[in-house]
Amino acid sequence: MKLTLLVGTMTGTAQLVAQELELVWDNPGDDGGVQVTTLLMDRLDSSVFARAGVFLVVTSTYGQGDVPDNAKALYEDLRAKRPDLSRVRYGVFGLGDRTYTETFNFGGKRFDELLGELGARRIGERVQHDAASGVLPEEMATEWGEGWIALAKEAAASGVS
Image 1 (cartoon, rainbow, N blue to C red):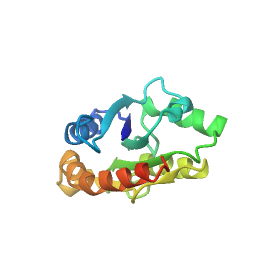
Image 2: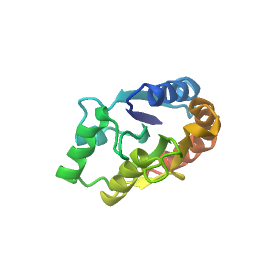
Image 3: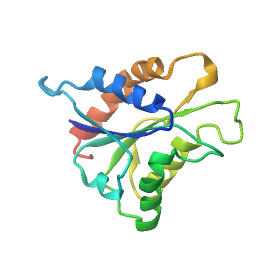
């Protein structure tokens, strides 16, 4: 299975999460293994979703509930072009801080809602890591990732990727 991790980050925390997940999941030599590609959202546009396989958006939230600066071009391109993403399966691992109650985890929420509007189908639930929880996001991601990757493999095997 091919898996593309799309990383939106301001401080590098989302990138660290993606790197940890890639270390755990990337095993293309195994039968039924996963071939992981991690892409920072810098300079990406909606054409990235033409890639084969499953996607995982790993993004933080910035400012007043915005997507990170490096994710803005991709997000705005998706909003402007509105491509048909009905063949896309994806997951979202969002990072936020619950002390910002009005905009908690909106970076992940914004991508999730937009991808859904464009016809993409989410695998599993949207994850909302809370920086105020005391749990490191990469630890939460690797625990959560075991179950999510199994769901992603099922989706890919059913030909709905």
